Length: 293
Image (cartoon, rainbow, N blue to C red; front, side, top):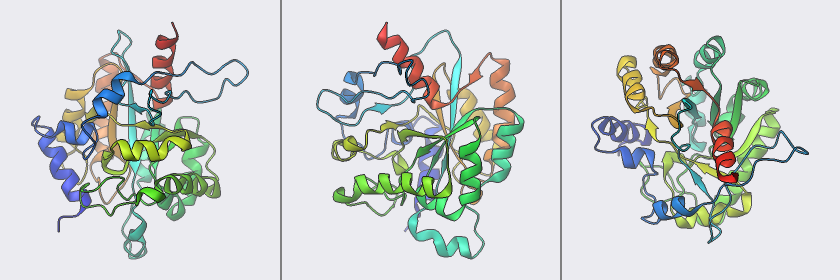
């Protein structure tokens, strides 16, 4: 059976041809009702002056489902959020023990050197494996750490070959990841969640409502999963970015070996085009401000 990462790489590669963008960027495996839910979700008001550091979130939809954020409204302000999934599936411990690297410290160092803010969607299992790196990322004001589940198991069936989280354990899987972050000493966490594989449906959105998270998808697929051609990855990002875009990339050496080189190419070119890099919280905050007017 083809592994998740290889299937994800195949789907996203097809996305470069316009064939699979919906599967990669809009939550493969999601229900047909996703678009309707996205369209009617309200945005919460910005945090009050009494709590200026509270990250902005989206308000649940009329049916109480977890809200989903894909990108900010298009505007003349050229902002873009680079996001990096720090993936490690719960059963991959033996591979890490054998020497496989699920982290990418060189990528984090490059983001710091280039002064690029970013949101890292981290699995709890990754934080358990790399607590010092998780703590360092979480302590750096350049970054914010968001939740990518504890196990990196799918929240729907048929999601790139991933094992599936039972509905009864979806909430606890998310909460366990936040616990892992606290255990590692991560300081800057935000109440955002990215579904493993981007796969979700209304059942999953309902199960996570009590956690208070905002689900964050993306509108630009980098295609970096198992890619070896960094120029192709960079070009796919440059072709896809629009004002308010959320770009999905990976922070995993073994699964995304070309990402750091692609970032070195993407950042100066987007800056030449007038883009400013922001964290996801800033995009959501911008959307909240517009909704409040």
